[in-house]
Figure 1 (tube, one colour):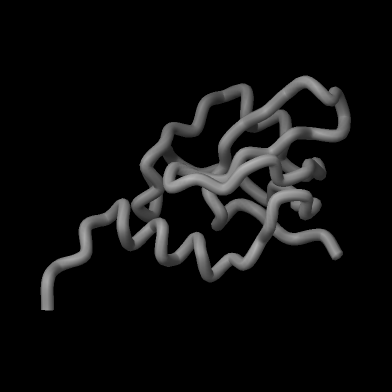
Figure 2 (cartoon, rainbow, N blue to C red):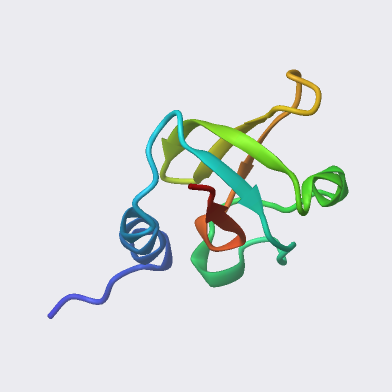
Length: 87
């Protein structure tokens, strides 16, 4: 069996999160850059959005892009494992 590289494993795990464009999510916590194979970096500005809700704009191999309802301007790409679906 071929070894799965970290990025491919991240993409497979993210697909199990089962969110769609237009869903509302909440950022639950921060993480380290590249944690759990996430091929992206956490920047300090993202900390502001912990506990806040946003709308999924796009789902990419490098994370889930969120547009936040509190300012309608900010868009960040978060790893699936710091997001909770809001039903």
